[in-house]
Image 1: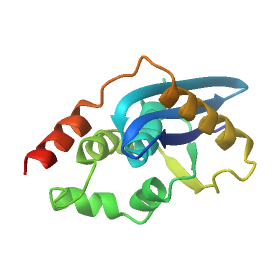
Image 2 (image 1 turned 180 degrees about the horizontal axis):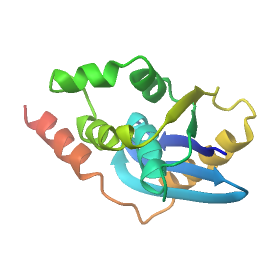
Image 3 (image 1 turned 180 degrees about the vertical axis):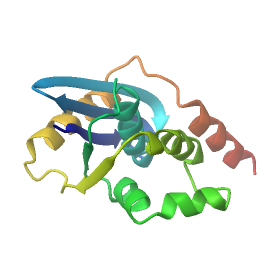
Image 4 (image 1 turned 90 degrees about the vertical axis):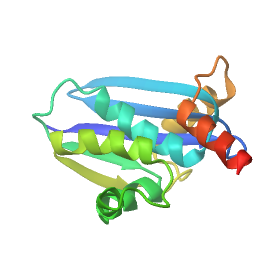
Length: 157
């Protein structure tokens, strides 16, 4: 038995209003999760979809297969970049708050990652896209405090 997690993120304007969609599948059960944010980026939402999926698991005794159309997320983990970024203090890297949140979860699970081509008819990826886009377009939105604070600091420099 395996747990399957399907993810997608969206941002309108990048940065702009954004959202993520996550589907968890296990033993015939399906759970869909999505949330929207008033100002964020596509990469943050892609990563948030993965994090929220893992955080919603009630067990770590089964292998997990993650399916994502985000090369940013998949390559950063599978190619080991994020582990190197952590040892270097994420110097010059974006989204360190979310990567640290992911890295707290990573050792708890036996995860295999699969990249899927976006908008190519993959049933669960298409559904995650609908969830993410709908969340991005439908108020009320949550506030991505870290992103908005960093964006504000960038404007002051």
